Amino acid sequence: MARQQADREDLLREATALVERAEFVVPGFEQPIVGGFRRDSSASFFFGPDPVYQFNSIGQLRRAFVAGRLIKADQGRLVALSRERSEHEIALVRHELADDESALLLADAGDRLSRLKQALQDGRYAVNGEVPPGANVAGRLLEWLKNRSPTIEIAAAPNVG
Image (cartoon, rainbow, N blue to C red; front, side, top):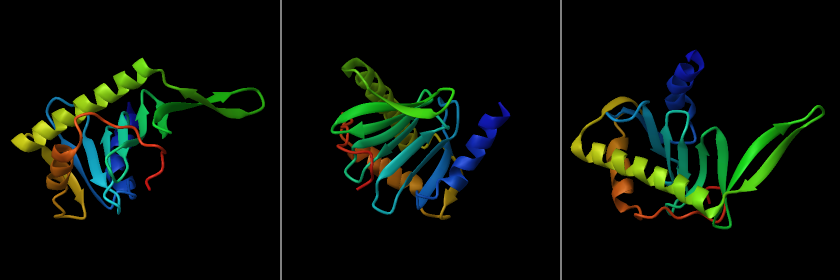
């Protein structure tokens, strides 16, 4: 429990790749949400430490962290990476998600983003912190959420560019 609390407190401070970011408390979500933008305007959303959804500059899902698994885009498909420990080494094991697994992950992400958009539109949120102060991250995130495709597309690669 204490570890999760520390994770939540650190998200706003440690997400330094997001040059504009804010932490929100939104009714209906169990944990604060950190959302923001990298220099190239690619967006990321942290619904607590898990799940996390990261998009590229054209709004395609490039990476996620869901149910303790790192998920990355690879040629328009989602691939889970997990660490498997043996007596002598730790191996990073790659598992391509089946179509139904991908569909569930994308549906959950879409639902969370839609609920966040509605809360931002309705003003049903509180800002716990913002970097830089006065950046109106909520307004930028709302515009991003309004303009995103109703269907989440998967990027060709997990990197930002």
